[in-house]
Length: 523
Image (tube, rainbow, N blue to C red; front, side):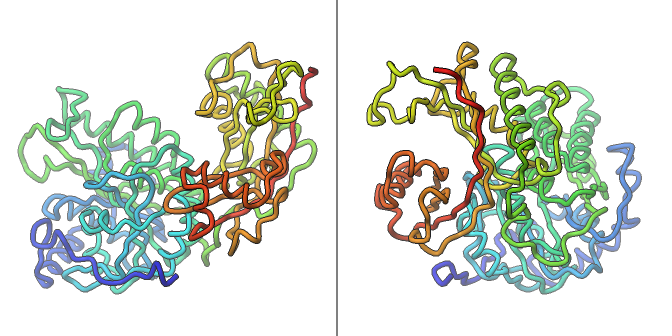
């Protein structure tokens, strides 16, 4: 861990501009905001936005808080923090967007402390060191140095909760919902009853300043409609609905990705309550071409685990019956045929698959599509490495990490294998009768201390180094007849690294797989 030790203090970059730099004046301002945050739910503002609002309960698991200058969003922020005031909070997980540096994944800090005019807040160094070992997480000190989305939360955190520890994470762009769910699943292993999750986000940014003007009339009413829809999806922790809403409206929610992670992170039963809502136009007291929306949302109705759960909250062993395996193959087949022919997944009731409890486990899975190759067309592997044992690989996509219920992961990856594997053209309709499907259900990855611990033929391998990663399923090395060194050389190349980069400072996860497949078509 020494090479990743945190040191130094991040300065309060926006003190004196976006909020008071003088500690006493800042404390007085925050306390005034908190005193005015009554009743706990601003019913008038909530009704204006949604018409319906779930009741707020105790404990508060997470809050969404705006991050503009305090003269604009400080009162909304106070409603969020007051909702959790008095709880036994010992640590805060802070998630916010990046406004100044573009990157993929999640940025971890390099400093041990974050300064505020009210006193420093210490980073939980042990958690940050462990998160650094996961995919998507990287140390990015420059991202933290210039970012205001987390800094604007820190004075409220210090005043309301005192000298708690923090885990500050700036969330960059995420490729799809598998990235979102992976971040959420990783964080779930560290969050427990005495933690609070704070997500920093403003909502609709409207007007020429933000290059977003989807309507020109009834501006305030239409902005409220956008904010209401976004809130409703987040309130119900509906990740798919929230993503669809963003795609369809292009709504300018700066914290879209951290809000998405929160929707995937919260435990079953959690609901969001709108505590306060207004826009920058309300604070300016005048009409303007531009508007930013500020929502304070508290999530309750469930509880975090009493203690941290560990690396993944997934099943540690695969427990599938022959019936389960047959049903999963049936589901994969129906999905591939439906997507190739109609560009959509089938309805479960139309497939006639029975979803057993085992098929609802969170487990990683790969779906592999093979195509039977006539004997006369077979070439040695050196000429066509996609052909092995008389079958041609036509697509192979999966989730290494346990992100979704198994049956849903099979649907997702069956679609991806037939249409989104960048190595191949999408499967065509006239190929379907020659395709046979293989499913590999994975145990959760576990870290090994050295590549010497890898057992070829038993272990699938994930290589990590310098933000690069690549995976081989367990059968790859044995089917090509590779030694361990040859396997890791090929894995390095697949990750975009130099052939020998696996030898130093690389890390390895291993997993096992239960593999089953359809009968191969007749030659």
